[in-house]
Length: 64
Image (cartoon, rainbow, N blue to C red; front, top):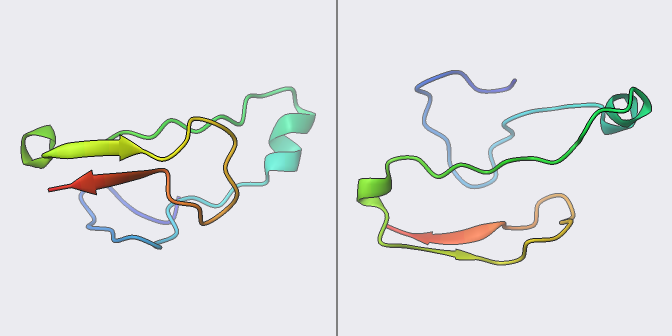
């Protein structure tokens, strides 16, 4: 983990670094769950895609 609980983050911040090859070699899942917190502050969420995305590709656009 590159961040800690309660830490503020912005677009582009590195959150986690993992060796996906090692994880897959052990037969483990590499799917990432994205959670939007502070729902009362969110006006809308538009998901860009629900497929495999490349590194540094936005997952969604959130309007506050």
